[in-house]
Image (cartoon, rainbow, N blue to C red):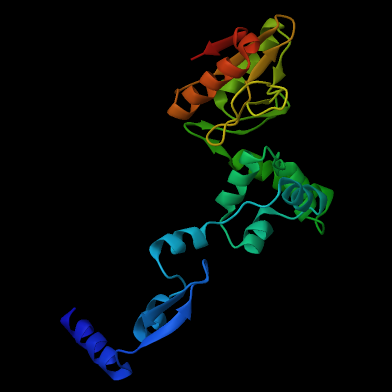
Length: 239
């Protein structure tokens, strides 16, 4: 450690203690930095405040992002490279803008142009069966004919089939920032939608299967009760 410090001090002496005038990349103000500071830290901003503001990534306009993703069929990986950000942030933008994401099958069809139909089917099946959700495994159930997110949900489908109850799996997404929800305060962060697991059409009942109620789930259900009280009254929990 001492040796590294000695090398640094000698290096600073060598290049001199001169300050160089620079222009702030955010506010345009002139400021001074030492030569070694510019070389080591790549000084672009006059202050920490300007540094924070300059590094904030602005979200693009919803229509532009929607057109790129759905119109031009650009993948999330390509969007992340274009905007020089992580894929996670792209998905956060989609969530904030209420842009629906492509399903696994749609993504495979778009990206696998050189694949045969049989290869696409195999790839979709592999990806679906490879998904995991907590303790329970998501995957396509051959006996039911649909993809379920967990074993509990799949078993409930089998129970409904056995008892003759008509059911629909995740038929509707309830958006909390829907334009039809007049007079409600717009949500800027956190959970923006909720999808109940089942709808029993003959009984006019919504069903939610839960193994563990996390904090995020509690917030989701509180917002569902606030924004859609008439639907929440028909919601039944299986825990």
